Amino acid sequence: MGNGETFGFGRALDEFLRSGKKVARMGWNGKGMYITVQGPDENSKMKRPYIFIVPSSDGSDTIPWVASQRDLLEMDWYEVI
Image (cartoon, rainbow, N blue to C red; front, side, top):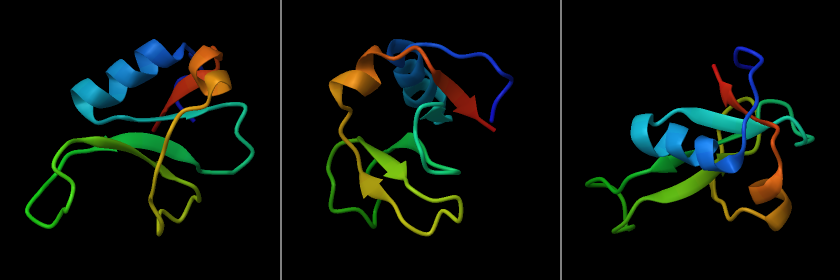
């Protein structure tokens, strides 16, 4: 976990869009889960940046992610270090 500071989704979005930081919610059940943004590169079929989630601490899997209304409204987001 980060420095103990929590914040809303607006700041979480800003954190990973501007600097590629990883963010997560305290309310999520999975240990080591986080989201961040991926920009297209020479190996990507995507043409625009997208948000993805890493659902496990080993980081072996990434899945495109869409926020729920609850995710958008909660104030328990934090930076993953």
